[in-house]
Image (tube, rainbow, N blue to C red):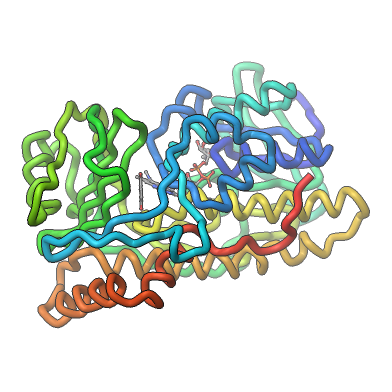
Length: 400
Ligand code: RFL
Ligand code: PHB
């Protein structure tokens, strides 16, 4: 067995793991990243697209914002579409000038992997049979197998950044974690189409046939979602059926037109709200999707994952600078305050915009009344806007 030693062992090379490795490096703390998939796979996965203002600020503060600055598309508002009418929410006007930025998750991951490799940071891709041990005492290790054989990393702390289906959370003894969960009786069918977006801003659409979302990846790539049955397979959705359904749900009075183009990717995403508490057990800290999942309606998952590792990096930096564990001890509590506010917002956006199967006329009327209220009351619109652009970050505001 090959033995390695580092300060922080990071399981998972998604946005949370790669940002943590980067922030730790800037604080002079050594880490090793262990990722189950190949570099190409993690860099090409089609996932999130919306960065909060605070996430962009973090990318810039951490010195990985150059391409985001050049290629990110800044938005100052979103559209709510219901009853065949268009309503703009002026995010910037309602939040003292804050914005959101369209910059795909895979570009964030690419930037962070490039930064890691540029400084010669250790990262193992295609790691098999990953396991974590010894984290309830003070000898935590990560073990895995790769082309070089069995590897063991001894470390001071383990960061479980391995997503919802990873090994870190399930390695914590049952009974030490409390799980809070809600599943929704619908899913999203997501497509990527090679066509210019049909709108400058995102469109969240409430329709009696179900929710639809118009988003984008670049000036020539459109991302679209349709609420569908959670048991639907992609095969049930021919290109023709998808476009027909999109035209129906997005139809408005007036001149708006949905652009069609070749569909280059299709996928069905289940919808779930999930929180594991606390986000720490002994010497293992869980972060991002490993600890919590939000339904995608509020565009929060990636942003929340990065907010966690921002807190964790600051806590580890303080510990290694002076030996104080106080920020490590408050890590879970600090993160969970934000996690639950974001859970609430994501659940609320989801409940507001989707058709529920056991739907009744009262609920439909209530949803429309709420949409009407949001689009006619500054106070109501402001509450949506300040959550959508991102609540202020908890914990220390400065980073190494
Ligand atoms: P990730 O991205 O899942 O990364 C975890 C990494 O760990 C690896 N891994 C392992 N490595 C080693 N050993 C093991 N045993 C391992 N098991 C897994 C995985 O290969 C992976 O590389 O988690 P992380 O870093 O916490 O990041 C979370 C985000 O990816 C996620 O929250 C977002 O993508 C959610 N999300 C959105 N978030 C937003 O903020 N804005 C959005 O607009 C948005 N849209 C979305 C989304 C997620 C979607 N899907 C497909 C779930 C739209 C969709 C359709
Ligand atoms: C996306 O562009 O993938 C996207 C945008 C907004 C959401 C969810 C996903 O709420």
